[in-house]
Length: 92
Image (cartoon, rainbow, N blue to C red):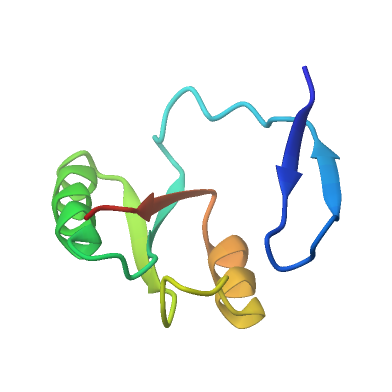
């Protein structure tokens, strides 16, 4: 199965990518918690951070400057360079 992703910042550009299977477990992995700055998203991530910590899963917190734009390249590079998995906090 092929998934087509559309980048809203590039009109008409579609990229076909294969879906990557997630890990079977978070044990031994570093989980990045990315706050995309939607209202209440930080509360979700706060709770997830506690739950992950209780299970001994390493993690880090990251944030976009605003939910209205894609994450800056520096944020993407930092998160992908430091984390094995990324969880985004989206809530309203």
